Length: 226
Image (cartoon, rainbow, N blue to C red; front, side, top):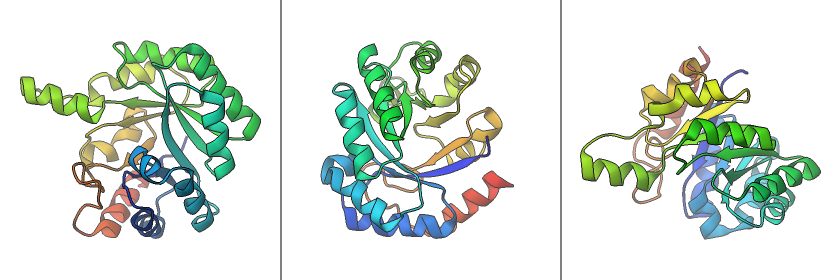
């Protein structure tokens, strides 16, 4: 598939999120993500607000669903989400329920392998259960905790090749990538490129990072598509 650029709105204020999303759309970003902090702070209203403001853009609701799969996916679909996220470490029945809701309500399902010991096997299992995309994810706490205790950087690049080889559906790699690493993801077999914390969003304050956000996103989108 052609590369997709997704901005993760890992913010806690809907007005800031809308303004940031507007900048991103002007810069050429394809998909908008209601990040987990935004959903926690604003609930379903953040998805409704994004849909009202950007009627033609795909909107990913990063629920990180672990239980109540059908209801959570259905609620987000009715609020205007086009994609929902379920965790690989959820019970198999939960993943099935999210997939069923996706089929019933016309939304795509992204399966997130954060926290799995064997991320390639977890990704293959989620594909077998019917998810549409894989989120290959090294978590914020995971990265920072291991780095603090060992001095070794942890990254989704560590097992990206194994995950890409394990599945036949599109992959995105998330978790502490540099700008150059993010830009190179399509060449590594992960065409869904996510820009969020810490590239565009400050990972500690959950506010927009300082600097020229529009210029940064324009450069990233240009290089990814060149």
